[in-house]
Length: 402
Image (cartoon, rainbow, N blue to C red; front, top):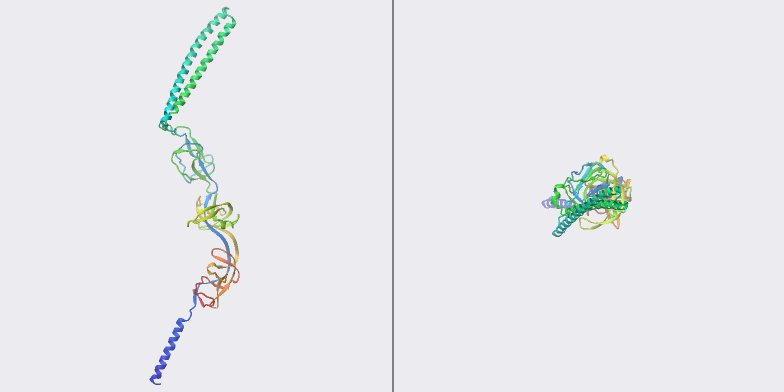
């Protein structure tokens, strides 16, 4: 073999190796995918939302009368006993300050009452003098009637006059007492708040006792202050009588019924709690979401059915996550929602078949936030692609990432 032939053979070999390398480099590579082997498993359809615990019956103690409430010593969490524990005391309030016109009128009223009392004292003196004269006449008439000097008719007239003067004196004295009381009342109109400061704590106070057994939940203001009738003072309730209220979207609330099972999670404990739907309120309301969207919300009330020892640390106003079970089944063939896509208006998945991806159209039943029930199109034991990318096509070669 001459030199020319050797060069031809050498370059031929190089060319063949180059073509082979290019063919290998540009040949389609298998797409790496995540495969899931289907199996039958339990499945549940739920509606999820954040809820809040609350005591079933919260009692707001308010001031029954206007006055000055003394400092409230009760603290949040204190145990109270019905009809025994005194939570607050109310004493009469101070009089209001008089404006110049009202003060002048009150002073004039005092002066008028003093004049009326002076008149009543004069009337008493007059009645006393007339009674003394009538008594002297009565005594003389007794002596004269015994001697037969005056007639019985004259004696009876003198005795009647004496008794009339006695009644007149009693009337005058009663009038004087009335004028004294009127004077006291007129002087009370001039009583200022400065004069009543020293009386605080000395009068009889109205006690406010706990209506039920429980604990103090809230004391908005514990300071001594003036309160109006009906003003709230504090709240009490029984922390062992808890319920959960959840505001669902109205579209979700119409799916909820009384008696449905509830799973309570993320409440702070190690295990989920159980509950039952007691009531779906028939009245909806508008609530603005965090994104500024107006939503129609409906309150759903849930009773805790777990052992109270499991949730004894829960209290009024605690946040919990609630899942109401609308439907559940123990043996369901389900696929992840991430594996589904639409193909010719039909839900489909990619099935692994001899190292290639194969489109399989499905019939789906119920679904939740994670999986969907498969009623036709797949069987247990088949492998599907969990997260098909745009590189996965029907018939493309695939290989498992694992």
